[in-house]
Length: 214
Length: 399
Image (cartoon, rainbow over all chains, first blue to last red; front, side, top):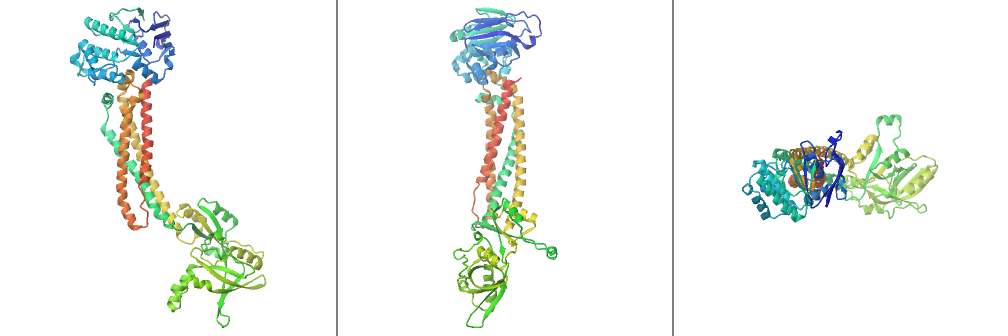
């Protein structure tokens, strides 16, 4: 997948509104592999909706999203499964960790599927994020900030053309935010992937090619 | 896979699965046992006659007092005949044609005065129904000799009744064949002498039998213009244990000569009982299937968020459904194996009794139970698998 194209997209719930001031909705734009994007949003402007449309678990919108030439509305279940395994990684704002599994198991659940990272690499990532002591703690027992870091590590455990991070550092301090940015860029540069980050204020420091106001 | 299972096994309710397990076990056991029992026992009634190649039933209309007084005919019309013919159990139908002229038969020695004679009658059936070698079963107008078949009962009556009590010599069938009878036929103002030759004894046909070609010819000569209607029918049936035979004759008010149809009645009740038991077994199976589906649905419902997250991580719906499918398949399989073991145990118990009552019975196998059990297993399991798959797919859509 080399680009993600948005054509006149708009969440159905916004269809009634008369004037929409946005650099994303109701516009045509193309996100390219290898570029880094920041989408800044105020609350209620449809940031989470945008994530769920692109990740294929909601389709209450008008206009079209395309992966290369494919309209994502018509992608089959098996294509979506493949995309989620090999082309598109997502760090959900609500994390979607399994609270009854340990931090390590949560990461393994993804890595077992893709076989992308070795056990050593995963351990190093935990080390780098400063949560190596939380390996075997149940995810439910961790603080939100710690959970955010576990979910981040999980999102790196797959090959991807684009990585989508929905408010990745909302609960992290500056140092940890910086470390996350470095780890992210290491992986992104290795894979030559594109990055899309959203934020409603605090955002991860990267060399953004383009900043959109949602 | 281990991690997925660790996640998805949460909220599994052991009492619910236990309930399903036992309900399904009993249901399948009852179904398999009833089919097995039917297959084992039915041969008692059907295979008893298997050494006779063909099965025949001789049918008459009931002779009632009222009928005798009012003179209602108890012969079979063309319509009656074709109706019997059209029944599913009937392979072939033949009619007994009686002689319409008077017959006197006697034997004696020409040299002496000793002579015995008696008034009698002849009947014929189509050659296909004659259970004696047909080699001599042929009438030739010029030879004036009529082949005759007598009921074996007559010979037995003489040999074991009359001859025994009077210390007379017993007669073998061969010896009887050497006796020439003097037959005198009267009718249509003609009197003619024939020779009668006993060519065999029948255990099926309880009448004095002559070839059909002779009866047709003689009725024409000695009783021309008389309508000949059969008073007895001989029906070749496919399976004498078929309960439809008894039902049909009962409905029409016909009588049969021997107790061949008792097997049919017994089989009917056997079928009825088996049917009821089978229905109960199936009902229990269906209910157990419901319990399982409800339990699985509840489980899927409770785990919806987890399933959803797994799907978002890139697990395919098929892979997410797999643990539940394996769970139900495993349960169903254990039930199948247990049910077969229980049925074969129960069978060994009743077959002991059956084989001591009917030692000639072939031992049979447990294949019917295995077959019906496997069928049920395949049907139930595939329905389970499809239902789980659908449910997971609905979570994928989750709209």
